[in-house]
Structure formats: structure tokens, C-alpha cells
Image (cartoon, rainbow, N blue to C red; front, side):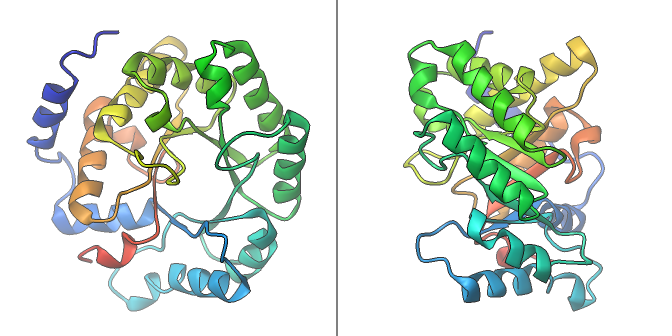
Length: 269
């Protein structure tokens, strides 16, 4: 895979108009693809209550918009979020498996994932062991993902690569393929907890990995951009990248998400 032209590819895609959505439609679409997120040490029951109330407030405006795709919280708040969002289309996602470092024994990671699933999580966001990956322990990284996928039962698994720590496009592509082949339902850019989070450069490499896998197997894998996407213009770039590399079949919240805590209220709906 040659990525010497990656920036040119991105600039050409950014300059291309969307094929099937006008400006108002795309921002409504983006809202429906957001994982409304709070992942702070200061999170508490009132904060989760406020987050879920916000998540359910958009469709209630009467502006022909849908609520965000999911609310993403730490495991202790899954049951509360599940109760508050009952009857809505907004899912409950939970980070689990030693988020954000990934530095914990696999038995502990699996136990935390099982806890979140048993509390009612519809989706699990885990992070790979970047240290092991950078040491070349690729089979061990894949084995951990497979163990966590099994613990997810019916919950969807989003595998965070933490692309800002993977150093090269080639590493991002390889990590994407490891995650996909180990059973990821989504691959995700970042935790939002380090200096370099989602970038178009990392994202397009991940899209290429998904496209290659789809050509080889016919199977669709979702993608999530997360970390630092706080304005509508930036979010629009990621939509264009998905449309141009993967196509219209991925333009729904079953296969595309944006992890953001500030973006939703900035969208011009």
C-alpha cells in the first residue's frame, strides 16, 4: 500500500460535492451518526442524566431530525443510560477493556466487557494493546480482540486503534486488518485521550482497509471517527471520505459514527 499521495487524495475528496445530500440533509445525517459521549473521571449520575436528556432532545424539536445514534459512557453508568434511553432509537455504548490505555491483563479486560454487556450495553468500544502491536505481537493483539468479541455476545464491538500512537500509515492499515479479521463490527480512530486523535490521513487508511476486506469477502465493517471533531465543517470532511472510498451503503449509523461531545449542538439543523 503506497500512501505518498494521501494528502492529495484527501484534498481532492474535500473539494468534491456530496452526491446525494444537500447541506441541511448532511448535518441531520451527521447528528444521527454521533455517539454523544462523556468519558471523564468526574462523571456522575447527574451528568449521565443530562447527557441522555440531551440525546433525546433533538427529535423533540419538531425540525424533522433524528436523535444521536448512541450515548457512550463508562461501565458503571450503562444501566442508568439504558433506563433513561428505553424506547428510543439511541443505543447505549460503553468503553470497556482497560480504556483508554489498554494496559490490563486480558482476563480483566474481558471481565469489564462482560460487566458492561450484562448491564445492558448495546455496543462496546475497546482499545487495542498498542504496545504489543508496536512490538510486533500481532497474533496476541488479534487474540485479545477475539476474546473481547466473544464476551460482547450480541453487542456490537468497536475496536479503537489509537492511530495517533501507531506512527505510520502502514501500521494503521495493518492494525485495521487485524481488528477486522478478529471480528470488529467497527474500527475506530481514537480514544480522544491523547494529543493526536482523529485525522483525515489516518481515517482514509482505515477506509482503505475496510474497502479491501469488503472486496475480498463481501462483508461490511463500520468505521468511527473520534477525538477532536468539534465543528460541522470537520465532520463533513469525514462524511465525504466515507462516501468516496466506501460508497452510499456505509452512509447510515449502522456503519458510520462520529464520537463527539461538543459537535451535536453546533450543527446547523
